[in-house]
View (cartoon, rainbow, N blue to C red):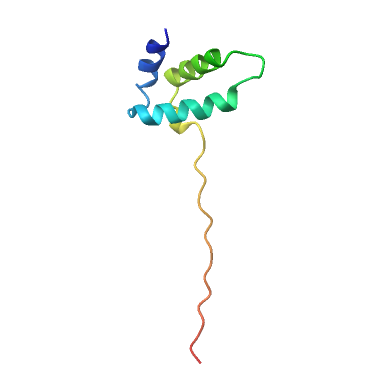
Length: 73
């Protein structure tokens, strides 16, 4: 059942709202046109149950911009 998948996914994501947001984004990226949306959603929740969805992507470091200082005339 999907409720078991949701409670399994909540072991890695403590906030239900965040789980909903992550699941919807992952479902949009993984969905194939000729398959059911419900099956894709269940697959995403199954993956979230087995792995932490927040730590799967590498964190990009922000670029450091150099700021030139002008001297007063």
